Length: 107
Image (tube, rainbow, N blue to C red; front, side, top):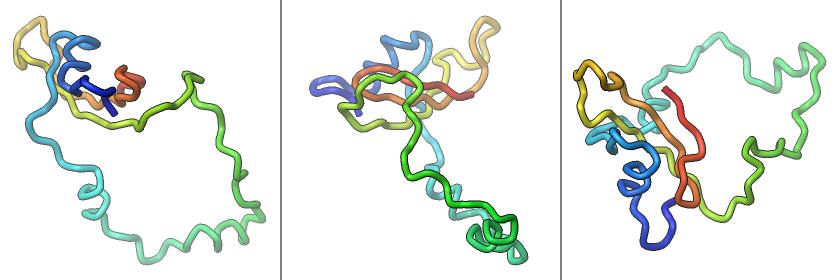
């Protein structure tokens, strides 16, 4: 989440000049709901028993950046300001914003 007094738009402008927050984006939750479940795939517990696998460890691995997490992370879809220009990136990206900085990028 953006720090107090700092907006997501300002963080994107500072950290990734030439990009802006996308005007429209399909929320991830809606995309997941749109997927149909596979009727023949067994659930995870059945597969674990079949292949004699134990449950995953309860302790999560350390974060990649190893920075202390003081705020909530927010995923933001961004797009180039000059879409279609020859010297401009041509596609949208997703970034993770936490503690007033971009922590991860995809796309």
